[in-house]
Amino acid sequence: MAITEPLSRPDGTPIRILTVDDEPSLIELLSMAMRYEGWDVHTAASGSEAVKVAREVRPDALVLDMMLPDFDGLEVMRRIRTEQPDVPVIFLTAKDGVSDRINGLTAGGDDYVTKPFSLEEVIARLRGLLRRSGATTVRPDTQIVVGDLILDEDSHEVTRAGEPIHLTATEFELLRFLMRNPKRVLSKAQILDRVWNYDFGGQANVVELYISYLRKKIDANREPMIHTMRGAGYVLRPAAA
Image 1 (cartoon, rainbow, N blue to C red):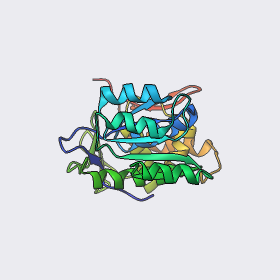
Image 2: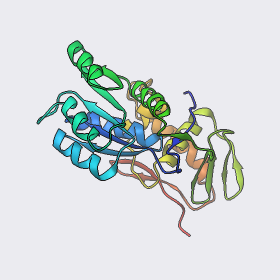
Image 3: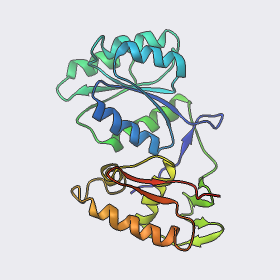
C-alpha cells in the first residue's frame, strides 16, 4: 500500500470534510477512509441537514451526492457557498448521470466521482483538491502517539516505552490503522477493507491472525493495548497507568 504524506490545515488542526449522502453504508465507508487520513469528518443525509452542519463546522471541502431526499447537490452547494464561497466540492454521481456531471462542473463543482467508486480514488481526489485550494499543508510531524506507543510514518520505526518493535509491512499497516483510530472499535470488515483492500475475499481469519502477531510484539510482557470486543471487533487503547 502506498504511503502518502499526512495533511492538515495550515493552523495544524485536522482537515474538516462534510460528506453528504442518504445511503448510510456509503457514508460509513467514506467516513472511515477519511478518518484513516486523520481528517475530522462530518456527515449529513439530506440537503437541509448539510447546510446546517456546514454553517456549524465550516468544512474545508464537501463530498456531495447529486441526488438527495429534499433538494439536489447543486442546491446544497449554492446555499453553502453563500457563506463559504470558496469551499471546494466533489460531486458523487450515478454512473450514467452524464448530465449531472456536466451540470455540476458548470455550476462550479470542482470534481466528480461516479458510483460505484473506490475509496482510494475519492481520497486521492480530495487530497489533490485540498492542496489546490490552499486549505491544507503537509504536517511536519509524522509520528502517531498512543500512550507509550509511537509509530513514525516516514521511517516506519515503532517503539513502546522506548523499546524498538520490528514489524512486517502488513503488521505496520494494521498497527497504523489501529493507532489512527484509538479507542474506536474497528470491525474485521473495516480492517480488511483498509489494510488488505478485500484481497482476501472477506476472510476474517486473516485479521485474527495478524492481530495475534501484533499482540505478541506490542503487548508481550506489558500492559495490553489491543483489546478484543466480542462480536464487534478490535480496539487499541493506551495502557492503564
